[in-house]
Length: 348
Image 1 (spheres, rainbow, N blue to C red):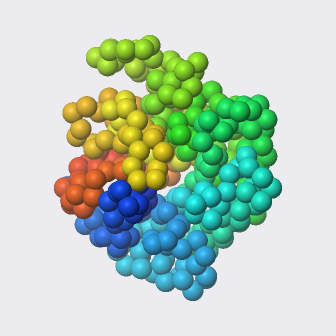
Image 2: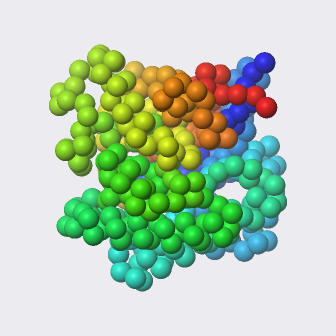
C-alpha cells in the first residue's frame, strides 16, 4: 500500500520572491499557481496542498476574518489543503529587523502575530491541518558581523518573544536557514541561535535541501565550511558526509521541510539577496540526490523515520516564469515528491 504521509505540498511564494521589481519578471498570480498545483498528476497521485506567502498580491497579512474564510474556501475549491505560511517580517514588507531598534522588532513581532492569527483561523476552519509560520532574522550578514555575539543575542530575544506569540495562537515558528540572513548564515550559527532561543517545538528550523547544502560550502562563513575548496562533486561520499553533518546538527530542531535541488552556486533575483540557487528536479547540474538526501532530514541518525513533518513542500524560488508556468514542471516536481514519500513516508 502506498504511503499517505507526509502530505505533498507545493509552494506559492516562488510566484512572488524575486519577482515584481523593475529589473525582474512579473509576479505570478496565486490562482495560476493554485491551478498548476491542482492539475499536476503522476500515476493518479496529486498534490495534497499548498504553502502560502501571506502578503499582497497573493493574500494580505491584513486580511480580516471574512477575507480569511473566503481565501480558505477558494483554495478548497481547487481540492487543496493549506500548510505552512511565510510571514512578511522584512522592513520593505511592513516588518523590521529582528536585531534592530525596538520599533523594528515590534514591527517584526506584529507581522508574526498577524500571520499566527490567520493560521489559527484556518486551523479552526479545518483547511490547515499542518504547518508552521516561517521567519528569518530580516537582516544581512554584514550588519550582523559588526557584533556577532550581541546581535545573535538580540535576534534570539526577538525570536523568543515571537515564539511566545505563536504559542498563544497554537502555532509554531520555523527559521529558514539561508546564507543571506545574518545570524543564520552558517549551520553552526543557526544551531547557536536556536539553542539561545531555547524553545524547542515552538521555534525550530525549516530545512530547505538547497539552502542547507550551501552551509557545507561555507558561503558567507568560511570558518564553518565543511567541504574543501575546489571540491570535486564526483566525490559523492564526501558530499554525503558533509551534508549529514549539517543535517545531524539541525535535524533535532527541524519542524518543516522543503524538498529542493541545488547546483552548488548562489543566485539572487529582483530585490532578493543572493542565496542558494534552486534548480529544477531534472537539472543535470543538480548536486543533490533528492531522495537520498531528503532521508537525512526525514530519518534520524539511526535511519528511523522521525515522522515530525506531516507534510513536506517543494521550493523552487526564483525559477523563470516560463518554467513556473509550464504544467510539465509541476508534474516532474510531483514525481520527485512521490519518490521521497515512497522512500521516507508512512501510512496511518
